[in-house]
Length: 74
Image (cartoon, rainbow, N blue to C red; front, side, top):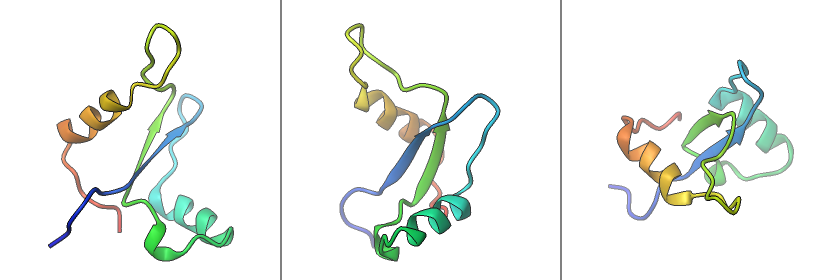
């Protein structure tokens, strides 16, 4: 049983680019991030949902995760 929140990496990428979990994991581990700190999921976006004043709307990002089936990448 898992307690607490799960982690997800939202990445801003150019249109048509898709980064998979193994690529991101290799990159992060190469910079010394410990394996237990890796995100469980990767979501590539071309832009973050933003408010009229430019702030990132984090609840909308969370809604994207709850709408989709959550399956950890590991």
